[in-house]
Length: 285
Ligand code: AMP
Image (cartoon, rainbow, N blue to C red; front, side):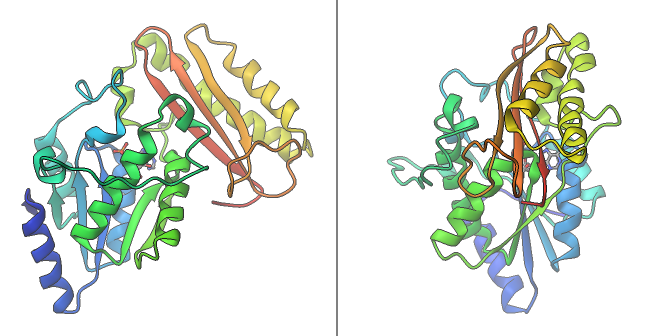
């Protein structure tokens, strides 16, 4: 496995592969890799000759009071995990390489970034779309893989790719969970023991919603209420939002007629960790 730290070198390397007829895939991550990330890598490897995993804690997608400084950085461990999983290249640029002095260009995907996570994290999608476009331009992959764990981000990236006529194919991978149902996340390492015990309630509440849906319930208010009740069983979880939305405009629906995304963001009250999770009913993203 090669470790590349310069964007110029990454660009050249990718060009070399492609001129020799090999396809390249990209899995963008912020590191602190877990099995969810590795499942994306597996999909990337199955669909390309050369897999590139980027590891970059992107400062522009964090707000001033968010966890950019304390975000877990375990580069050597990440390299070992990626190599064991068959990754061909780790691309880990520096902040200075990605954002040189006088950096001034950002991608702003409108509307679908203004709801759900975009409300409490107004920089998130502008930063994420910008860094993903930069990574796509540097690595120039035929496919890029994103997790449904960050469903809104996946939809924002797909929208950007469509709107800006990019050639890359966006693949999505299902949410990888612990046995408890808790979605794997690099931020789970912040959780206290008690929070870790309660956090699976988030998925349990989504499964409750799915059960109601399968029993024929179509009222969003009732489904919302059931989720809130389930989460209310823990004094350590405080929902930021529980939303039943359509997957195109991300607008709340009253009646679950066609495909819906049920998305949850929850704060934990001991460590102040923000957890997100979701489920798609009546179709797929
Ligand atoms: P992150 O390192 O958190 O920025 O995530 C990098 C990529 O991994 C994103 O496309 C995420 O959606 C995806 N990802 C994170 N957690 C999971 C998970 N539990 N299951 C599947 N994909 C995930």
